[in-house]
Image (cartoon, rainbow, N blue to C red; front, side, top):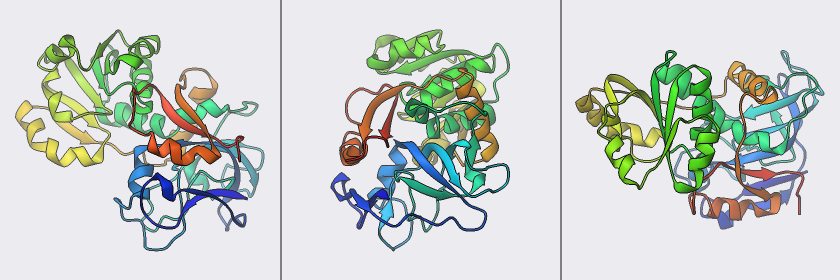
Amino acid sequence: MWAVQYHRSGGPEVLRVEEIAAPSPRNGQVLVRTLASGVSRIDALYRRGRLPHGPTFPKQTGFDAIGEVVQGRAGAIRPGDRVAVVLGLEPLRGRGTTVELLAVEPSRCGAFPAGYEPRVEDCALVLGGLTALRAVRDGLRPRRGERVLVVGAGGPVGLAAIQIARGAGAAVDAVAGSAALEECQVLGADEAYDYRGEEAAQLRASRRYDGMVVAAGRPSDWFTAVRRGGRAALTDGGAWPESVVRAVRAGVQSIPIAAGHASGDLRWLARRIAGGDLVPVVGRRYGVGEVGRAHAELGAGPTRGARIIDHRRVP
């Protein structure tokens, strides 16, 4: 089978498409033939060696995928199921999702409803959607009619957070780059502000919002947009330590959020995707042989949607 691997930490140039033996699922695992995977900031941190994940190589890239179970039966997951998959932050991580076949535990899978055929685009909502779900449901816990601000709303986490918060009955505003403003409103934001504009600058001191999701940018720049006693869900774990003191001074509770890989949450996402309640947004799509370019372009240019790898396009 093919797999995208790297044999040393470094820049995007270390990524290679290689032929390797197909994995044999252990007891309690299933084998998934993948359709697509995502490219995220966490992928780049692992690839560069910025997060410890064991000394042995080769390592594979990718944290999320969608695909079909082709072997194994574990728990409620069985052959023929279409699934969304998210891997955890494994301390000795070698496996990744940008592979042809993936051996994975059912606890990291969420099955789509029977009869639904996932699209490549649906992968835009897997890792980003899971993070957004945790941020809104567990971090903000909005009540119907409360106002929520999503900062960094143009990426996969922010666009999913808009939709999930609206689904919970909150009124939502968004801050994003100019390329994503229209998309934010199409997906449910009442107002969408260019983060470089004068209105966004005024918003920072408005104390207008009951809760806030910070999907990108410096959280401390936005705490005073939230009322005293409000909550801010921070999806970049690296930004949380330096934000704690400023959040306390602003009278806001800051809550670090990680996607995790709960199968119940993945099933929830899969059902919402299949039902059309969550709409995926793909900013850029790459073939398997373009994974290095996908990593190199991560964070470059305007942000609008997710970057995904289409596994049907193999060199």
